[in-house]
Image (cartoon, rainbow, N blue to C red; front, top):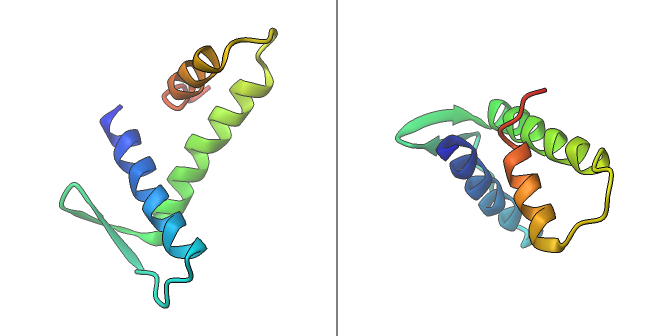
Length: 80
């Protein structure tokens, strides 16, 4: 669970660099004192996001914003 939060936090920082036109993006991201190649990082983030989107689309009923956010967060950890 902490790994996903760490990755998502770093992904948001990377998103900000892209949106705000950072002149240089690093080829390696340091997470928990370990270097992760940007390609591997993007691949893992993509898996988390795809799982969250798939789970959202399969929701059978309309729920409150808080319920949806909770389920989306939980779905990040479900690899099915």
